[in-house]
Length: 233
Image (tube, rainbow, N blue to C red):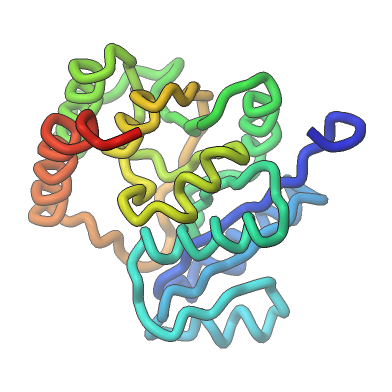
């Protein structure tokens, strides 16, 4: 802990083809979390994301090829380790997350939690929709394996403490996905959810169409039951 109980916080923003969203995302951070550092990891975007980052003089790391979410986030985590950050906030570049919740998430890290998830469903009930079917199944799988209920396991809005930053930065088996939360729980990491509100993306499209959503859900459930509980800790 630093002097005065103040933590050095870095917001890691993975961005792939987010030319329509990245300016508003960064401005939201600057407006609602002043004093918090950020780094945009341009994940080999094929649109004008890199040009916009340069034009607006934003802080960024440019990836020459598309590594995917895991590679982009892990790049940001390595940057955090190299620059001695206490907390990393994983924050989507598509404008769905709001920086107004960062302070409360960091406060939970100060209180001793290792991972804090910005959850849509702490106080609000999860809707019974086809879109949320996968989230419900993943939540159930995590509960069966660990005994811990995580209401919004697919949320990409998360805060991590120093130990977890290193876990995700240097272990190629730790993508920032719901299944690795099982590994973290088995490792004794403390996880808490805090209520947040999320917006719909304004521009671009999510890769999670129906087919990809089914593949993703299946991969997560298989990993939760057959891989994560048996990893060496």
